[in-house]
Image (cartoon, rainbow, N blue to C red; front, side, top):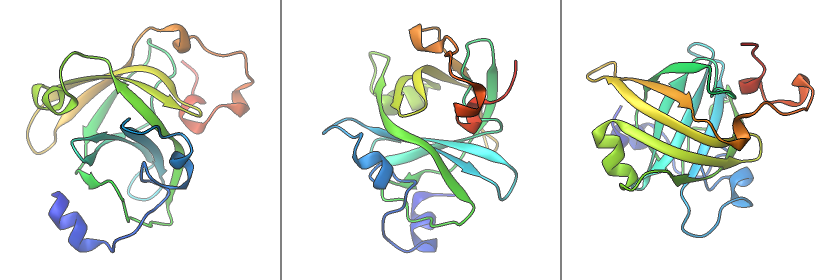
Length: 172
């Protein structure tokens, strides 16, 4: 769905999903792009990873959420771009985490997206660390591979599993 179609379908306003929403506001630093990880129960149980790139939220659907370890990789589908002030307001959406991210490449994020490889470092309340997305199929069903890059934060923490967000509760 194109951004213009999405805007026509939804009313304007802020939601908890947007990087400028209530949870993200306290984590945002001036000039840093934001991200949101949301859990969607409707239309198939999955998570959405949304990165702020070139003034829109670029979205990927992740079946089991981002991997906490480099050993687990995810096949993800690219979704439609959404406005920064995402006015979705769906009752079936739960924000799992939000915060800021930094580009881990020397190219602009928009250029990385066009080239088919995006590398970034997430800084959220629950999800932190380096990730990479690589396009493996173009076209109508654009498919990407999401992997966790090795970094000090990729080591599983000592917290009990029930304290991890749903995206981190699966066993390898």
